[in-house]
Image (cartoon, rainbow, N blue to C red; front, top):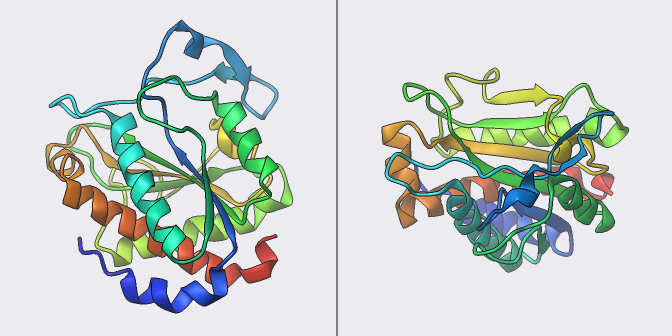
Length: 234
């Protein structure tokens, strides 16, 4: 997996400058019992405010992986003139509930919303999957979010990442159980970049270069989508 996004990013920069992307590094840096509080799931039910996330077998936490990758994504987007906002401000404290994160994103009227995660799947499973809300609850979810998911999938594959062998279909996973996606009023996806319980993938996630490569692949997906969507995203 190589960081091959530099040229596409430079080419897209002029057309995407000033656009807005809301970045959500999944989970929190610290947790207490409050994360079990029930909040809306966006479909008439409830779910936990937050979950702790997973870890590699060596103890490297998902929340730290998510935070590091998002900081790298933010840096690259900023260089391209894209305006960004984050759902949490550090990797050491409690963060907002999943419904609050969605409300923060909606308030910005963003061109795209991206939540970064790593999965805790079966040890023999590997690969990424891009999640989107399905069945859709509004026009943004019915059209733009699906296109965003497809573009992101294609760019992750182009960067050398493997679609999940154990979840979703061909790297895509439409689902109804993620509150952040259900509550989104703008094109929103959640990416499980790999499986922390797979020894090989965990080894990549634990290295700075591995995280840089993941971030570069996601940046390619975001900038490609923004360049294609243009003003139609708003």
